[in-house]
Image (cartoon, rainbow, N blue to C red; front, top):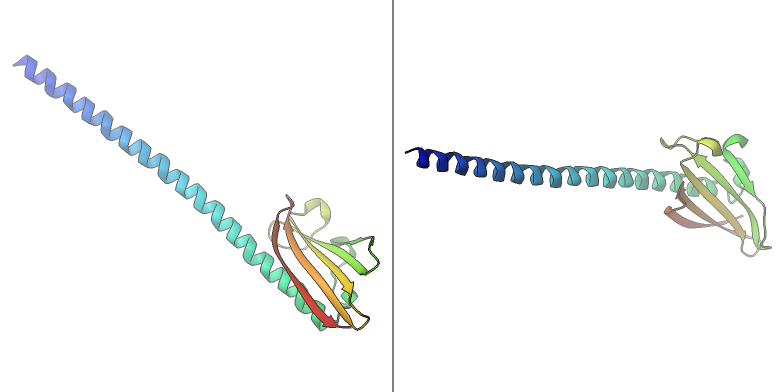
Length: 147
């Protein structure tokens, strides 16, 4: 009788350990899915914000007919880049923090690079690209307007 009771106890312990192992593996997989979904959600949010900011700059470029001085933020938020190429009129960087508010370079999480080219004297082309602070391109577009 004692032998049978001992087997039942050890069988119960083995089943209990198997159940704990299964649930711990399931919990590990679930946690990985939650972490991955959080990363994807943040990337999606950054992409949506980058699209809005980039399109906003593109609309301002079109509305100003290629004259960027009419819509820029205060000088603290904008860095002008010196020109190497003769066909470039100018280029600027505009910095944003983690909440997509304009900021200075020291608190920047994102940067929008706007490069303006003179096509033939009457047309201007702007290349507008939004980057993450690691240098990864998030979104970019080109805009053509008459000057």
